[in-house]
Image (cartoon, rainbow, N blue to C red):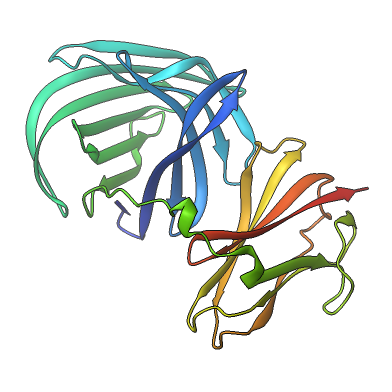
Length: 289
């Protein structure tokens, strides 16, 4: 989807997949990216009641609970149906009233759709109006948000329009995963130092090194830095990733993870390596004070 205002234009990507446990309940992850960078993840359930969001993580993986859980879409849909959300998102009080305005035809870059229009009036934390057009089997195809000042003056208006139809991306076949011996991996504190799995929070950089043997030329090598058990960060949160392409069947390379401002946060992490999207190696590490 593409978000527009008179000054800015950028791409918003939604990805559904995987689960995360919150208070002992497995919630579906709805990842949201803005121009390719993680923006936030809604943790939701989808059942006969509709779509309900119980928690959310920000771009850094910090978890915030919605109290009570917020109904994003109430089922079954019918003209005139309505519901309220009066609660808190973290420490922020939110008051919203939703109503199903009816069915409408809507034209967006992805095509023409017959949709349900759902109108929301928000009074807290700021006055805003939100209109969403929902198509069963596709999702929200258009969203318009208007924010007004205390005097009613328009402060901001954004529009999201579906650019292309949702696609299901096939997951790698476990049987087709790259043979472990074709990629050797390890972590070190120096560019050419010995491998280790323990690091201090003031380590200037962590080097993720790989060595391939017998891979096809042009293989995509990707590394993902994941927080497993880190304070104030959601479990299994993907902090960063990087990739490169091999120019020979026997090749080697290094991914550098530079120390963030303020130092590394102590905890348990893992670094996952992939070859052409198939898991090819993993190293667990611990960062201490």
